Length: 379
Image (tube, rainbow, N blue to C red):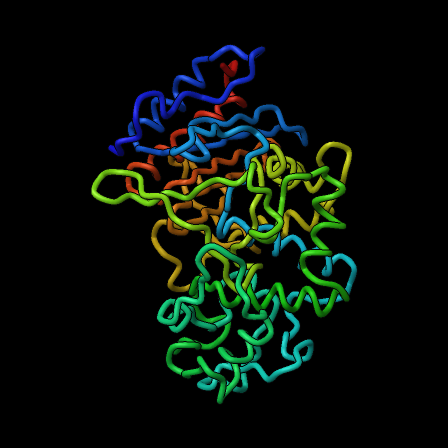
């Protein structure tokens, strides 16, 4: 357990709010797992029914987490990038099984399978054969600030022969495109780049105009720079059983994991995803499009902890039941979302503490308790 100090996990409740058994449960799970700060939310039938913050955004000055506190959500970002891509499918600006190379300003091919095209579906489902092996070797994260490396420069240096980071054996896998699952941040960085080129404006502008502004997501940002200091969470790593504050990180492939958002904001997005594309009287995708995103496949090499891979969304078991989800993690960050389209409900849990076995168990337990709202009176 982390040594957080007395009262570290007291929930940040408004004066009019009474602490409920749910609050007690969440606080107890945080305490067991040593989570510094946490935000949790639940949506049903296109409406956010619950959003609340607990613990601290910054432990040193005891600044509490509130519903508008902005967490780095890491790879949960990929769901927004996938949604932006599927909007372009609806607009007939791209076709899922179309090769992406025609839309790029640089050549793209796995050198071992130059005659097999990489498609949009491959990128969305982590089947592109682009590999993150080199990505993790070079670690392009910038501590304390947004990356100064432009996305196009990064992609060309990583994917094009002769590029600074290019090596065939670590930038691409030994499987053909479409042949095997291989989780890929670079692939989602490339997808974000394609969305920008095909959509005629940046991924940032497209998601702001078509998702964030219509859903009234006022505390959501793609950059550290545009995240107000008063709303930021300090990330904490676990070192010798104690929380160690870290600097936030920036990296060039924003579409893979740079989004920062509040629980109140992001639950509006999750509400729409779980409700056939519509939330708070706003539609971001058609119901048929969401159905496609939730259609799960089991490609070769899918890890045992997953039961399926959709378009952006993954699937794993929660309380023994397969459920669409996505997790995010970085030093000082662990986040999770689940959607239950059958009951039009969804949950999100954000933390500012590195993932551990204990925090993973706690986040899943909290998500499960939130989803019980569909089955019993919620308190």
